[in-house]
Length: 386
Image 1 (cartoon, rainbow, N blue to C red):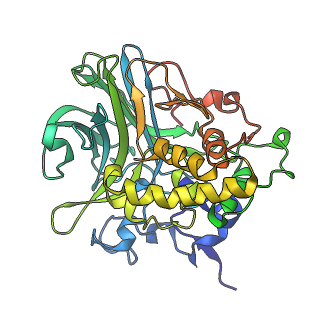
Image 2: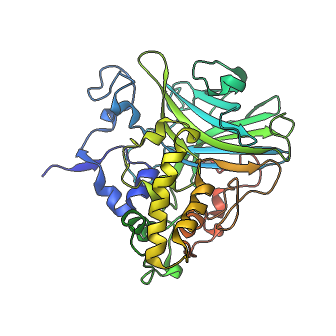
């Protein structure tokens, strides 16, 4: 009997399919670790040299797990997590050296990015650390892949770097995200089928964090309030993206992130990240996507009886979630809850808030922020290195 092993399983895939289903969802014949489809030395039989091939994009280093935006000390903090090891399957550590990791910002509700921070990495050295660079792009350049931008600072993973009112840290951390995947399965199934949500067999007191002890790669960017576009009171929309170099010399967007739990709840079958939304700006596709999602929300709240006007409720929800960006008022306390959303801090139970929002009623997760207290800190870099 041939052993079969899930390939390229990331935390997002595990969430989307439910942990149990995830472990049987993407099976291929077992491969040696050095045969997994990551770019590397010539001669590895399974490794592609062509950056445009589907295998090139199927890399945990390019898959976004979370985006956080909150207030620091006289600053705004942006965190992007990628490359989770949730399934225990081989995950190449570090960041993709042929990729870009971008924080895109829309000031004042603008439909186009006006400020982008772009992080890039070199290949790992003998100690596993990677040289990293941070560029800033403004105005039209902020949405142009061909624009170089201004080099803000250089450093290496695992060590803080700072210059000109900006701090950067990147490396492997213990994951501060928490959810019990068995609860998610009770939500995304009905959302997909338009049937009633049944929590009668759910016992919040028995909830366990499915991500306890797991790790992700994290990029932490902190920008001083002295920045002209990020002064206290400024209203911004934030989303992040990973982009991979192409054979033709350009760049291809692989994955993007805004609100938490969007893909796991609304597109649970997109385990290979082929949804067209991955390849566009949130402001380019939100009209078509939000009508599609509104239909699902209206159907599930109607079946569950949690709203007297399911269609009106669904429209209210999608107006909050689309375009898929985190809205934040600079300098104010971040919160991601059922009633209010302003950025996203590390501690808040965002999965519970999102599931409750979609269900139209409280969905008690049974998990409190204390379950992941050891995975976050109050000072830079705000995360805990693994």
